[in-house]
Length: 194
Image 1 (cartoon, rainbow, N blue to C red):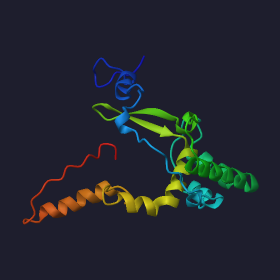
Image 2: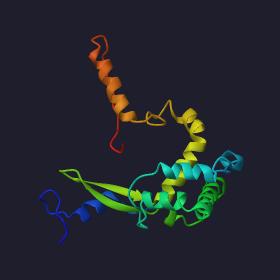
Image 3: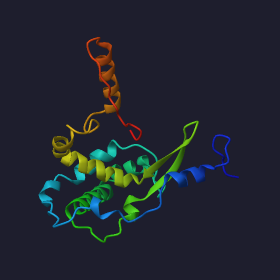
Image 4: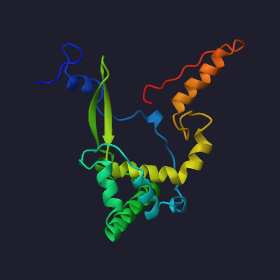
């Protein structure tokens, strides 16, 4: 028997299906057209075995579809001397290929796969996707390499870029402003996915 949500007639599975729309072709106006500017691969030269190992040591979290959690990946990437070094090098190579190559037409479904878990919010259910740990390690390593560029492009527009606990910082900043009697204003923040 499947769990029924909040005493209603819908199961957790039904709610998750409602929140996950079917895949469809995007409208033409949201796609970029024209020539794609190639990325200079030298940008990603910092994606090294050493960086992968460093990021792996700081990794934590649940397992993706493969069933290997962050502790298992950390062990594989750090505890077996030459075998770990070769695996770290392979992940660094994969990261450089993903970042510096044209992957049009390449099936990346295994790389982007995630396990969908229902989080009981009482009332309601929030779907949480848990991706593969090796993907999280690669993505964190890439962000370490390109973080200065990302910050310079997005920080004025996105509050959460490069700021730890940015939503909490925004709340505290607004609280200080509203406690000042000479300040009047309103801030609308969508932090539903934070």
